[in-house]
Length: 70
View 1 (cartoon, one colour):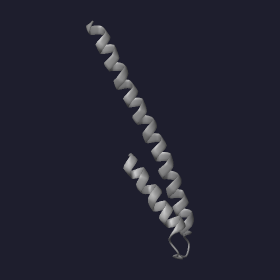
View 2 (cartoon, rainbow, N blue to C red):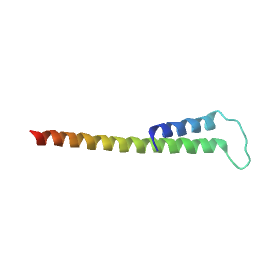
View 3 (cartoon, helix red, strand yellow):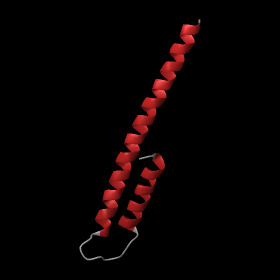
View 4 (tube, helix red, strand yellow):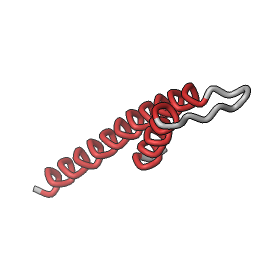
């Protein structure tokens, strides 16, 4: 899940939680909104964690490569 997908889930969840007045039998729309917001936040945290790890690995390889050439 990417950053864009996570933000989309958070936005759709917030709309369902705070802005929708529909009543559907068997489904609690505000609860679905909260679940989507939680999934979006978890996805955003995981995506940012993996992105920071990848960035750190690239920086470490660049420093190691520069040191070996001298």
